[in-house]
Length: 319
Image (cartoon, rainbow, N blue to C red; front, side):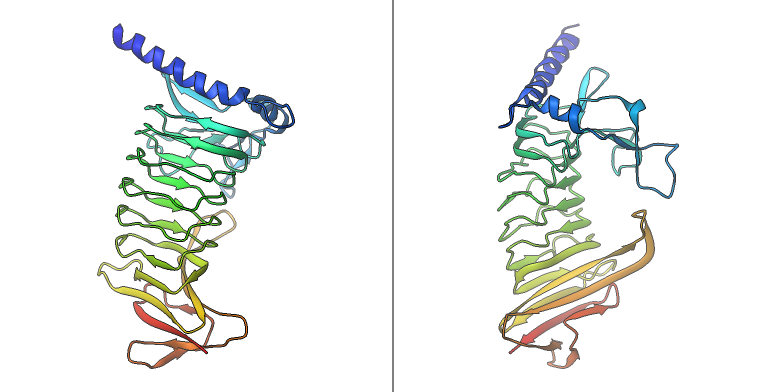
């Protein structure tokens, strides 16, 4: 009985935190709850969803939903309800709060039963997930977040913090992390040494000058383009051996790298793979070519599509 009472009090505190966020008012005087009622579009993927689609509109029958997901007396989700038992990866779900214009500070701290958060494409300024040791998925892409502490997310398998205002993120305690997206922010560096299970890493369109993913041998999806990178040290993807895949820029230019499966319109893998190296000469300068460790010229293509899984140690020369 005491345990049930304690759980009930904890749920009351947690839901009160979320309700406080929903009642916050923006500069226009509207509360987040009013924004949801005005802008909400529920999307889902369930057993009846057309198999050629990634998701479908739930339609009017879904009604209005404030995004608070409570199951068996536990707050397990905010913004998304995942129905498949193993939580990750997403197979069956409903998503409630994307593109709703939500603003302010979202306090989800101390929600020890919370499993998933999805507040993509809003205007949220900050998120507190301190103490959320059970959280599996944190989806906060495309908001206005400038700082984020994920030190307590020791069970988390997916963090999507792309398209925010972040300059740094400490993921050294996120040992279970499989997916990390920090694209379109202001990062100058990122340390992935504590993420041995990482398979997906997108860091494109930042300010990163050196990248090292050699501590991530399972990595099979990488987008490290659109950065002022002078050096990338990685491993050839999908290889049992730990073989090097390294790019260095020599002269007035930078490099980029991308490897991943090819997807169709339904975001399903086609069975084809791509591994591409990019050379970006500075304005007024010229890319001369890709050279191997022995100094042999291998390609003069600024975007060189190589064989997937190839091991290379390359220098991009510029003049």
